[in-house]
Image 1: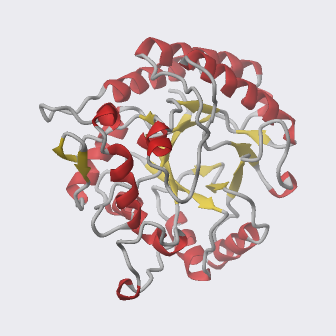
Image 2: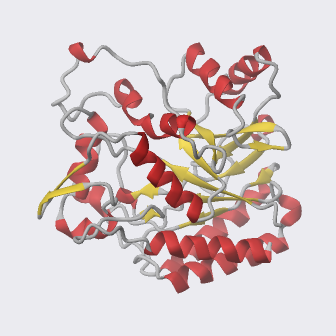
Length: 347
């Protein structure tokens, strides 16, 4: 049996619009009818141009985890935000410009439900630290505590973490200290190169590996053009002096956020690749497998990271989506299952 590990990025902002900052923006972006093909299956479509996200419970998240398990995913790499909650009586949640940092605790629900799920023995998880945000010592200790759990993903016994969004050099020593206090090995740290694939954007000597969050290709029409752009980026990162976790992508088209901008990120008005078919996903998977075979000595062994499970607004998803008859559209889920089967047979 293949030892290949398939990780998938998970950024879950599917929270109620009327009480949360992130839910407000996500529902606004995805509400127009033209985006119904990328609306998650658990959304409530209340009118032609309006969706809502319910406050989901454990059973709802377990259903989603089961879809991921069925797709062959080994672990979710969660954007791992602070657990520390600002006093909600002091903030105006109707103000869409309210600071992002103050609301990050809203989008920790899925990874918390993952930790308490009866399915956690069948799909692992790990953290993506967002380096543009501040983590308390309590956050570091809680992450180290999560690393003690059997469902936390490891590489050669080391707890795996990814880092994204700039680089705070103190994060790794602080997390190492928290791990040491619990008798854990130091984490295996993989930095997302976000400053341009053609050049290093930090000191990689303190890293164990490099990868990327998303392949943000512009002025292209096809998925084949996007994957060619991705393979060039994978190739360039080989020169950074550390092992590489190769990336695969399910797409890139942030049109919902161009039409309805969000405060924390912006996108150029440009041409974006069309959504791929099953056959195009499989061709992209075969191209990546060829590249992995040729570059095994430069890679973190037996790992592929995919963008993404639920970046619906940015045009990349594996999670099933909404249909008028209430039966989730699993076309991307099924296609990714076929991709994973191919990789496991080939690699």
